[in-house]
Image (cartoon, rainbow, N blue to C red; front, side):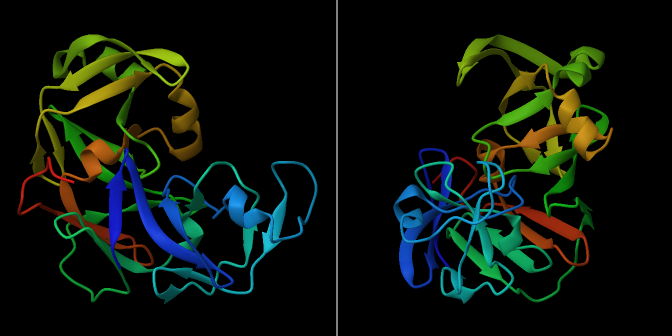
Amino acid sequence: MRFEVKEDKLLIDCAFDGAAERCRLDTGLDRTALSYRTSTRYKRRGGGRKTETVRVRAFKLGDHPVRRVRMVGWPRGGHALVGMDALIGRRVSFDFDRNVLEINVPAQQWAGRLLIFSGGQFAVGATIGGGAVHALWNTGSEVCVVDEEYVRQHAADFIFINRERLGEVEMELYRARTLKIGGVPIGETEMFVDPGFSKIRAAYGPDVHMILGLNVIEQLNWYFDLGGGFWSSTPRHGGGDEG
């Protein structure tokens, strides 16, 4: 199925009970959530903004029925948000040369092991300079984010650029001198330093020091076995600065 990277979002067609709309795929979320437009067709279940859900009879990601998604969250933004409950346990590929997501792809030669967490989110292996880290693979993040503590401990591996605003917060912007994902060198990539990254480490483990955002993700083609816990990546044929 086709997807589109637009305004730093990965967008894909989906349908809730036959109502088609453009959805944002956010692999940093565990649960799919409705858009405001679609939510008006449903009655809320549960109480409180964080626990309210609705029941859908049929959900499709592209033309692929997703049978395990039945309870979806109340809206949190303009687009419906497709979380990891739609992909968990499947073999999937993201081809950024063709902008195609495939589900239930054949098994192949995998390059490494995934860290898969309880909500379905997952991390891949990366190296910054000479140091090996795990990086959350998060299509919901527009840019790469790195652990401030890790930057301070490995200052020689980073180049400070400036300070910029990311949403409501001013953050330091750095560039890694060398960054490799699964052994594949990544071109010059800017990344924001998050002083609150300790919360990420507490949730996902002490070896997770980076969030891979779309500015890195779209530079490669990706293959994941989310049931077996394996992954691989290959350079894009057209380079990493398209789309």
